[in-house]
Image (cartoon, rainbow, N blue to C red; front, top):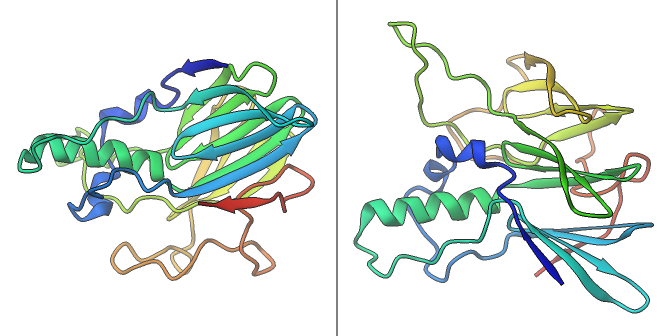
Length: 229
């Protein structure tokens, strides 16, 4: 087994936007694993959990490759009173637990984990394109970008049309090129569709027919199996 350690979404580390979603709490046992997405193609069986993608061969079932999207998970700080270390640890763990979707098209896997997008080669698990989906920070009074608390993104509503992936997120809809990861356009959602940035979520995003979008699948069949630990 080849263990591929590559920080696909390193650009997200510069601004730790997920930490505030935890309310300062850190799971004492480390990452709880979150949800697991599974998808089978003619190239193998793929599983995604906590920012780690694993590829298996079937008949017989064998593990072939592992890709750590954010690099190795950090160890929990030994001193729980060290607020700086604990906050850094919480941020890293929350990034890995961000809601995700996994799709397939041709020989590519399309992954979205929180604010990061990646296109992965199904044969080699090589990263072919990445994108940072965070909206631009608003400018302050002096014209410079400001950073502030932002609700972590849930799994987006999505529609894949050939080489364009449309995503409905907390407050916006965007069109993303899966070929090179470029954001083609983005628009704010109508205010009636935007989630309140205050209270809790009451459920995931829904499609045009009112149904919740699945958490894994391919462009034509979006009811791929899902397993939870």
